[in-house]
Length: 95
Image 1 (cartoon, rainbow, N blue to C red):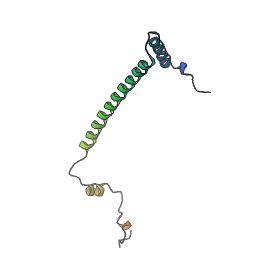
Image 2: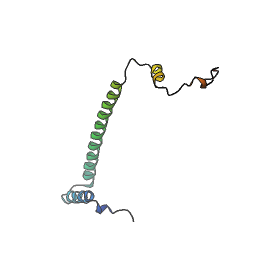
Image 3: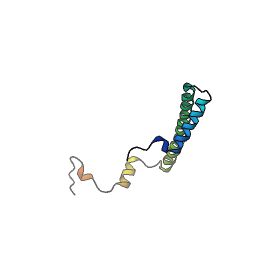
């Protein structure tokens, strides 16, 4: 059970054929590498822009779902599970 050979992937076989055709038509190695780099950069920029838009949308959605009139102290009081006053240092109250 070794690694699968690169020729077992149909996409890589198709890419090898494409590169062979480009070299047969006289393209230089520099030109082929440049084309591959441009393709990768375009894909990267598209993915980055899409990710930024999704992050912006989610951030606005989360921000819109938080009520502004609730302060942090109010939120803690409303959502605290138990009474933790006895954990305070110097507290005379014991549970």
